Length: 303
Image 1 (cartoon, helix red, strand yellow):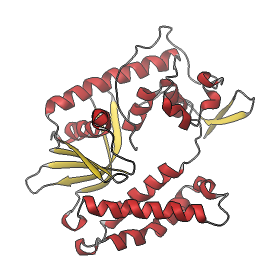
Image 2 (spheres, one colour):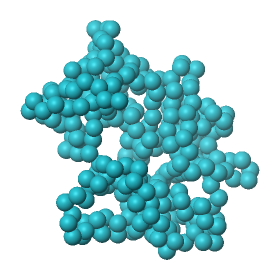
Image 3 (cartoon, rainbow, N blue to C red):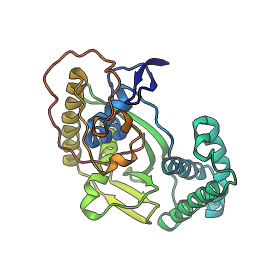
Image 4 (tube, rainbow, N blue to C red):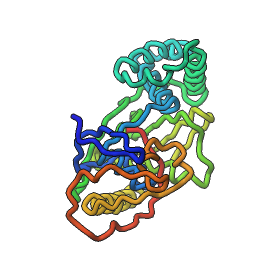
């Protein structure tokens, strides 16, 4: 449902959907707030539209292919079969998300689309050098999880793959189509995985044995074996983050946090850092004190 229109710095009307206070937290939205509170507001409160990107869409396509590959018997999970799934999954993706037509609207000869699909094939092929799908029988694929903490905070997200050993040990696996981070940024990269581990622990009372990030862009695999203390720390971190989000929601004080990532943001026309003006705040302001700064490092996930 569409809501009231705001105004950009140039005076153009921007249509936004009806706003509502945030009611849950996912790895992606947590990453948004840690990156820039104003970005979180634009996505969660204002729900401003964003243009699809080639990189993110390719990631969605590759995820879909790797999920569907496990429909085949173990012996038929080959790289040629996986690559053959790409055209059909791309067609399904376009049917479910008509806005993706914009991506290659100006690609009259189809060369850019062909290169884009070829890169998707390379990413899929690289996966076979990192894992052997003939030896895997995932317990879950593209698993939606949601848990409510004792505080009332609801955590939710989608886990790419869950493997369960015969002994009951759980491994959480996430595919990344980008490159692995440098070692000094590994902790931030694991934020999403520890988030999921916390949800699984709260749901199943089982601490996952291993968290595994598979980087198809660089051919690296990052693993981490969590302990209960890790998940307890993550829960405290998320509670502090949620408190900051709650205060910002009630005060309407969403401050931009400029970084090098601003160059990829769709909302610069509305950002004060770039001379823009945010749309009128669509929620009632019930408090006047500013939100408490939260220093948490993390990365964005996929919902």
